[in-house]
Image (cartoon, one colour):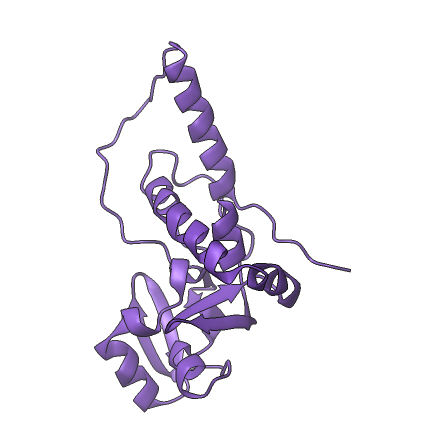
Length: 184
């Protein structure tokens, strides 16, 4: 049986946002009960119980070529998430340059982002492409993503800013993805 990523509440809010936009474009009135200023938000990080990459060490993907569970003795906080590392050396490398080791798309499933929504990840479904870490929902979803890596990266790079913008939108804060949190 193949598991398929479920669309997150963010995807549902994207649909709502597009629906409201279409209503406004068609001449309908759109009223926001409590308008907020657009805020510059850091891109959301996928977490499970507050841990990025489900507690796996992001540096180990690059140095060991494999997913390695992090240790609570070696933790850093970055972009609202707790990152765990297998060693003090890996923690120091991350602390010096987190962007070099953090997964793309905030650690959300690369396939899902390429399709325009977010989904959780399996730390064992990963690939480094051009020095960047990409994670996916499952091995079967990873296979689909790998059928067109360059095309899926282009689509993901194009879609992710919209996902980040939705994170900053007034629609933010409805329900969260089951078993995960990123303030989405």
